Length: 219
Image (cartoon, rainbow, N blue to C red; front, side, top):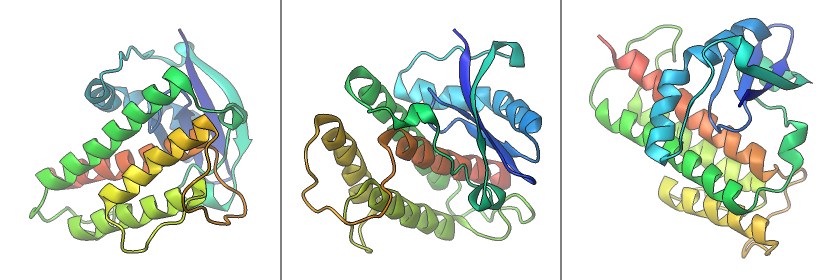
């Protein structure tokens, strides 16, 4: 089975994202470099799949990759965020596919929590991989981002909500969308994210910072 990948390409930055593996997404200067980086991170993503108890057998070369779509990147791409929504991500997320996606998303969150906990109290190496932000600020940044992601699904959230509550709201929103049920506290977000893109974005963000922490915590 081929690895389905969507490319997002801007003049100075590109992302390659595995559509069926939320969070497995890497950026680089060009599309070819992003795809190379994506495949290079397969062993690290394998730990996420293992945590989610989902079988993972990715290709080791670009020959096993199917580029299903190339999106035109914009300002978000250049800033370093995979912000384009693939055509396939417009489809509803339901049934076994929903359960699998939630398992992988929760595994990505758990991977971040584990990395942050393990490196707690350890000064992170300074430099281009993350600049000078240390563990407490990274953890808070991820919490704030999760609030934004839940908001983009169409759910009203408190600014002081814990990351646990935000994640619970996120999963609840996904299940309500799948069942066609209204949100208890909806908001009026102008362009709500699709469920599939929201899962990919949240999982990517958690893993990107988890791997950043692991890299910067190394001696």
